[in-house]
Image (cartoon, rainbow, N blue to C red):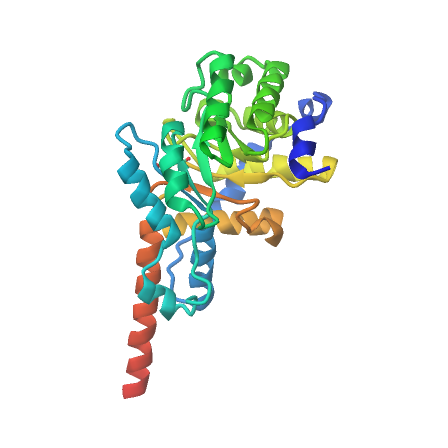
Length: 319
Ligand SMILES: O=C[C@H](O)COP(=O)(O)O
């Protein structure tokens, strides 16, 4: 059975799998606090990590004034996220890096698909009444089908946050399962809107239910909530997907999104993933960073790195 077929079937909702879970808030915050130490990019391995982060970015534009022209420019950036001189200086000219996906609104999928043709970069579309998710389910499912027909290979759905706040776990499961089916061959990323979910226990349970219902990825936020991706929330979701993996043998992806803007943010999240899940997750198939403006900082840091390296090499040559 293919991955998608298995995900389409879902895992029967077993409340006992998550009802007894205790989220140790202080332990989560202590652990998250160790990941925010200052890091500057001076060493080869740090530059390599930034290139890795870049390949995991879902390069995003989700603005009310998006146009096909803006999406075309974004797609061009997705194809060539780094200037050619930086790519050459990093020794990556044989296999220049590209981003993980381009993420847009449903009516922008067609221009994105056109601009990315032949690049191997998938188009992700938000859907289901993004960002609040408060339209009736039939319209939300129709929106998924529209985006898939337009060529989206990944659908970022939003869950109904009130199902979580009211403890309506079966309703949440049924909703995500119906969305999973509407996605067909496309991957489903379930946005939990964690800034709205009040407690880490809710975040853990919502993660678990979304995975049971067939989500290929769980994603923190829309970027439109007051609080978006944070390290404690991410750690909670990562531990849920680790537990889910131990129970089912399935690997589900993770996508922090919203408010992640700097190269340092990308390093903190990569370290979190490496230490909690291992190297297998450091791959665009299982890890994405949803970000509209992080790429510019990564490019700037890599530019400083390569210029600094040359400056230091020429200082040594003159000494
Ligand atoms: O899914 C991606 C987010 O909407 C991007 O949020 P951002 O604009 O804060 O980077």
